[in-house]
Image: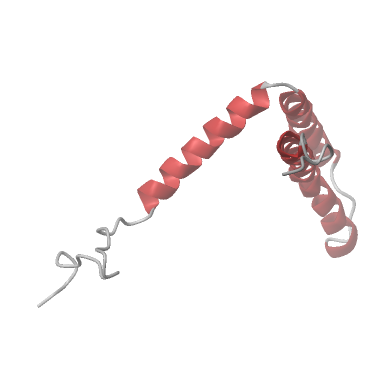
Length: 120
């Protein structure tokens, strides 16, 4: 069987591509999460309220959004992001598992042991 020299590092390359894709998606997502509220607020005051926004609105965004965004960017560029993503994922799974009702396992026929759920 012939070995394709171009495919030798393909598996590692796919892993690197997936990792970089996740990082870029997280960075773009954090930018959107941080800045869309400001954009929507400006659009609201400009087109719906038809009056200028108070300077306090922009001060609050400057005090909250810019530091939050500045904090998140180095996290994505460092190795810490792996730990953060794993911790968030584990917390998310705990919440989902807590909220999701548990059902008894199905037997080989595909029918669950639903005796506890049956009413007579």
